[in-house]
Length: 283
Image (cartoon, rainbow, N blue to C red; front, top):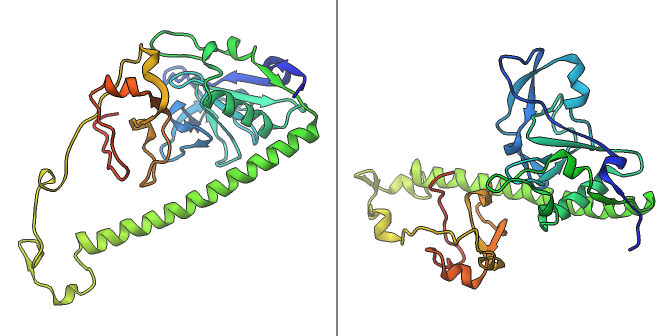
């Protein structure tokens, strides 16, 4: 598709958030997003902190509907689109706030950056050898496609419909998993399982049940990581599960990283089958 392109700095207003400085900051306490609150395509608003903002800072550091919020460090390029999930939301310095001009529909620009970020096409802009960053001056030079507005609307509408469906299914899954947790607690913690009225409790468990250690009923194994400096170990077809892949759902269907057969042979981890339970040891 031969759509015209323009540098981001010509089609959007963007800035970094405010530096957290408890001694210097003045104004009203307001909630803000930090790097950890921005996930791929969504926000984690469960544990928000507050910072002081003055009146003249509200427009610069405040979020409006359609703003794209992107991580500057940690995992640069990770982004989500703000849809007024909460009022009076601000951003911290580790985040870029991208506000497109009228020539771009916010959702179209968001899906452009989501694709670029998830497929590694922004990696050439990163700085830093250990901790990666995506500086503002590098982001400004990204070439953004600017198709006719009608084309943008069509693309954004189709992709948004899929996202809405995914979100609806996610909420249903959360409700089902919550029900499963409550049922588990009712049956196996409070011991109010079907027929419990006729069961004797002996040594804390119903008659006929046994108490065993985890090592007696399962294999408890550890993981390992191939050398990150060897590119031949990475970007293969084998999913590589890390603490970042832990979600609120019981099952993980995707991982951010993947390794090759060579990577598997050169790390201390086994290839684990479906229905393996992972418990994070740290992080």
